[in-house]
Image (tube, rainbow, N blue to C red; front, side, top):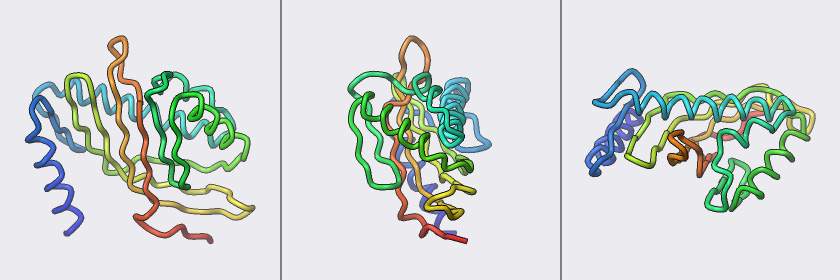
Length: 168
């Protein structure tokens, strides 16, 4: 399919970068433990995001770098710079009591020495917006850096142009 060809081309370009390893779902390159650690950090982000939807933003501080060099370009158009802005936004989202869940589907990890990138499709379902259930699918890119030997998120970008929001 065109989608598979596009993903394959992106993986080929990124895997040609010096010092960058690629691990798509179901694959483990040399150093697969690093890709697994990066994917675990990505999974921790989505677990924290689901806690935000369940009204608890506290886990976000553990998965994000807490410095000024972070950014979040969420699916609703806000561009946030620095941990204070990002943390505040997750608090606002928790207060909305949207419920539902977000899953990271078709994830691919790109692992470097000090930076890692995970791309995926975010599948959100059961969100309550304006009193109605909403389903959203977005393309997402999550960027991580190493801090104290652990992967910490420094950038999240969710692009809502993948598919229109559907309201049931």
